[in-house]
Image (cartoon, rainbow, N blue to C red):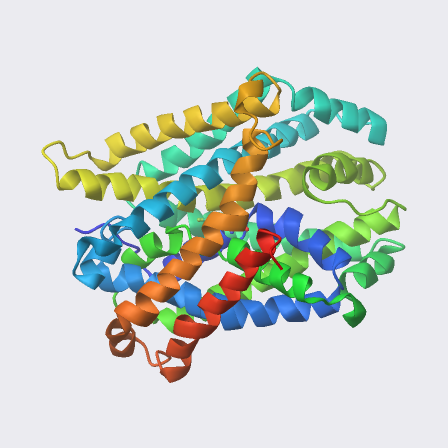
Length: 443
Ligand code: PFF
């Protein structure tokens, strides 16, 4: 039987799992707080529906109609090999993206283990900063945990989609929702938590500039896993009777809700104890562990938070790694040396270990020649994939469907109306082009 999801809810939870990751938990809340609170949230939601929805539907449709992975989908739908470069683009993007994403997922696992051993007890910001600096300079510890993250992801992909990804998503995603809700309630009830909620939600329209709108659009692409072939690959596994529009809408609503819940966890806690909000690694690995020390049950809170990060990150890495795994199976099936799913998982796993090692060597300063443009490989992988390759992938897939295979849209979805085509043909490409000019500081 063809590899596919056995139920609609399976696809939905797996797609939501892909989307809900480090982006929703460590990027979204801070950007919202800094960039206008409720006003930014409104713009983010509008961007998610105007740009995100057609692009998510588009990727699901490309997979569903072609019944192929990112390797064969563009060729099958267009009927020519001219679009094969787009397959290679999505593959390159996801390989670069995962090279830093697995490293950070490894950090989450490490911190969860350390939190369980009560390592952070009594540490203040200075001690936690020193602790993080020591850890992020330690090649062997980082490599071991990145390899654990890769191995766990590979173990899930070892099975067919319905037995691995689907089964695990059905367990982990409800668990993630429950953990998020319980933690959010806990944080909101803290004395002084209201200041954090105000930081997050109070709309400040004076902060909204064209640059912030572009930032909201970029964030919505990243959090919705657009532009890397993951949704195309999952679309290829979508049950035939599943409606693409409904699945896309449900997925986007879940992502928005979870991002808001993540903010509701982070900021009440940060403000309740008089800390100032930070972002990225500093927020997750320094500020929050310190905040948790002041709470009623520091060990339980820290372990729960890092477990939540691990679950969110793992369901994202699973969707990322499925792209090259499916790609290699399909590509090699056309050669004299077809690789099975198991062999493909091993090949991709080894490649991931190597690219992660490059990132780790570069960020620990052990390979200065790997510094490009003043940034180590870890930073470059982040910048190149999120600022350039993901928007470019989204732009190209919009052009592909909007201009070259529009009939496929008309046939398959009621929403594939003139409005949808106008979005894919004109509005989305033009908007992404403006984002590019902005990233290049041309504007
Ligand atoms: N959406 C994920 C996040 O917000 O962390 C990132 C991501 C996962 C992007 C999977 C792309 C992907 F295929």
